[in-house]
Image (cartoon, rainbow, N blue to C red):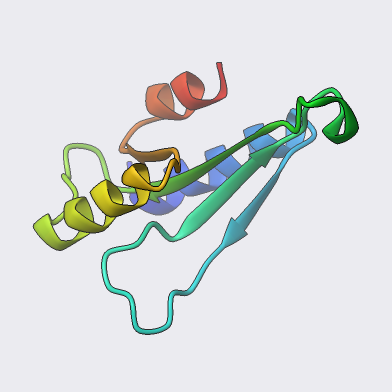
Length: 96
């Protein structure tokens, strides 16, 4: 299985749940996740604004590079949810 296959599965599953996936390009920032997954919540006006996660997809068994891990750590310190996914099971964990 390739990274592209996992990405296609992620996009399909997120859409099935009523969410959206954005592919992000970071200008002047190496190592940042390249996808934003947004899942709907009950009501943005009543405190439950849904879920958003930054996702770095990898081929099975491939780990994030050190510069990516550093950027993910910076983002988490700012309260962002960042995940690295290398499998269909990882997609399902994210969406559970």
